Image (cartoon, rainbow, N blue to C red):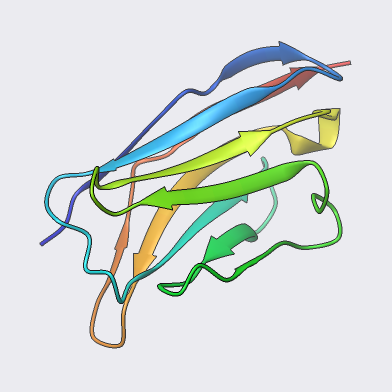
Length: 115
């Protein structure tokens, strides 16, 4: 069982930056794909970034060029650098770990962008 704990959320003005971190309670299997999702009020949870075991990353067009995901398996952490934040980036951000056999979610961290 892997527990994921997010941190780094908060209130920021539009155009600002935040860096989210996700710490795992035990070693992250290097075969896990690590992702960040977000959920705005009344909206479905959506993927905003992922990084594969091989280091491949991808982002939806809504955040591409502004958000950057990175992983440090030695430190059991995954980070999300968010730049040029917009009001539509507001939501609860969740860390996610997935392998062929298991999936884990963090409890989420709130990001609020004021315009």
